[in-house]
Length: 557
Image (spheres, rainbow, N blue to C red):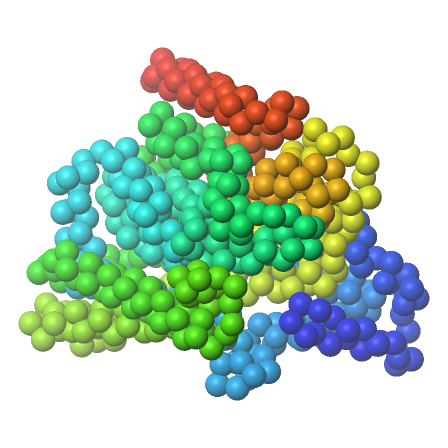
């Protein structure tokens, strides 16, 4: 039996070369069935119980390949080699043979690591921290600053997570805020904001899917208007973003977050990555003459060049491709984010190197320290890149097992009470994104199903059900340790991935429970006001719990 990887699809050919445990019919039976969920569930369980992310992802990838290879060891190795090579190489890719998207993300991470090292070396991080602390003098204030930055940078969730996390790290360190708390804030204000912003990398993908669904179901909605109409029904998104501000205001520590916050206040943040711990204890060399411009100029260059390149590539794509959107949305629809990340990362790196070299010329920093910063900065990202490659691999393998197709078949074959369709679609999308690590893949599969179900039962359910799918995909993405946005939020914040996953899960589940009750209330009453009333009650209960928690801790002290 030979197995070849093309993108996310495996083409299986039977040969007599190997003795196999199952027949080809039995193997195919396992694909697209409940067995397809085993690798993802195994990975998640291992992350929770061992807190060893690389080991967990590695075992998950091997188990998925083992199933795909029909439990044949030689074929398992071939499958893994094919999968990992596909993450680096692709036909007609970057310079003809490289995987454009994956390598652009890796390059951006490496560049960001070096940029951060040069900002520290030049004294920009210390100067920026001192300048902000003069204006933002409390732990609350620093957390609000990070949350607002996350909301303002709504163009793309990857870009948001990496930039906001890196800018906020020195502030969090100064005010003894755990990296787990920072990663939670960053993660909860990236994808949730992007999915409801009509000017984001998410918007055109969602609207493109909507346009096809409306055409196939006979719905008469204008695509852009329909996108805006979904916003009030994004209950999880609304709850999770507001929950961030409740957590900050009332210092709500759930689950392991309490441990990480307590450890940080006591001077030992146990949620730091090993690279961050090494930096914290290594006494980084830095210029004593650094200014805030040593941080602002490189970061601003990175942001401006990235955004301008997105606009340029979108405009060129819009001019070369016919589109049903007007020019503005056609540009959004044709953005080449991988190119933008490469140009933005390179520009930010060059400027940060130039800014830092000023301090070499002045004698504040030696030539050796300058060169060392370049490699130590990139080295700090190696752990994150290894985890990211493993996460990508397991997503590819789980996709090949057709776990999403299985979950989709469950929802289409079930005889569901129409009143519960919104909450059911929310839960199924949540579990699909949780198990596969991709919100885009989840809503890509489920939006057409949701549209068809709504068209068959009640066209008035079309908008709420689509919003429920999108919200569910965001929740599943938040709760999954194999999600790339979970990883990038942790990486940007300097937080260990296992610590981020374990500490954020309680908040994501709380927000999801409130959102689920709101979807049930809406399904039964068809009233947004009733749904929002349920959400408000959930917030009040959360605030009451936070106050009682704080009061209990104060008494104990």
